[in-house]
Image (cartoon, rainbow, N blue to C red; front, top):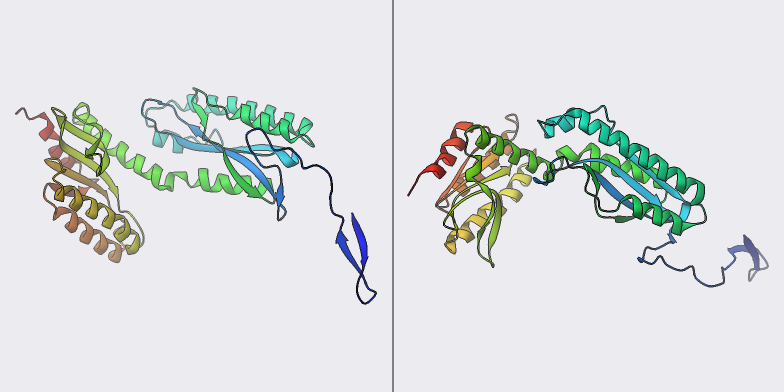
Amino acid sequence: MVVRRRGTHGSCKLRPRRRTGAAEPLHARGFLEARAMNRYACQYAIIRFLPYAETGEFANVGVVLACPATGYLEARLMLPRRTARITGFFEKLDRRIYREAMDYLKEELTRVGKLVADRGHGNPTFAQQAFAGLVRPREALLRFSETRVILAEQPADTLHKLFATMVERDFADKAYHDQWLERGVRETLRKAKLRDYFQPGDIGNQDLHIHVPFLHQREGRPQLAIKPLDLAKDEPNLVYGIGARWVGQMRLLQRHQLLPESLLFAVSMPDAKHERVHAAVEEILNDLRGTAAVQAVPITDVAAITTFANAATTVY
């Protein structure tokens, strides 16, 4: 609604009527029910498939988003029949388990979404409570990430963008690629019957330390460590940025006499066609090898990784 205001030259200008009255109360958890620049405050959570809780490895398979101010709650999931990604990431998984879990969650999401559509308009508290109940912590194959807040002009468009970022690209994401590299090394150790000699652990002390997924210790002291390192980039600057960090870490650990007897970087290499990137990788590898006790080999060199890890079987 607008009201007319007489200008200084007799012209009529339009201005919005000021709203009066008490402010709407905030949700008990402090979630803002307001619009800012035609954008709505929305909540969303990432849906994760976690078949082996003991390893902590998961895959992003969907996103659920709620906009209490408009009574919107929808989710987007990976199609259950698209199992190649999942079985590629979790090799021994029965795809039927994944499909059944996704079908069950889809039914629950549809049910809650319909409830919010029917009863959530003009009742933001109901939509918030429905969302909170949906994404509550649970011990299941499919779990939800922590709740996040985002401002959106069109909640449906924002949901699709989040899905594209969090799910469609997740296997290219650094965290997932690191997990993929670790799984490759883990499988190499398993086939060589050396897996039990290595566990995740820290190298260093309280003031200076790094975490490695494969650490062999004797009497509580680090002896051998394997660290997968992703240098399969398409720009030299990215290689230098990542590599410089690890070169610096190795030099600091050496200076403070905190390195184990031997540390191996298992390196994911770039495509052979990227000559400048390869040159950057070789420079970083030479710098790493310049640190005492540090070795570096391509992650595809199974023989070198196995030979290094086999030293864990030596009895002193």
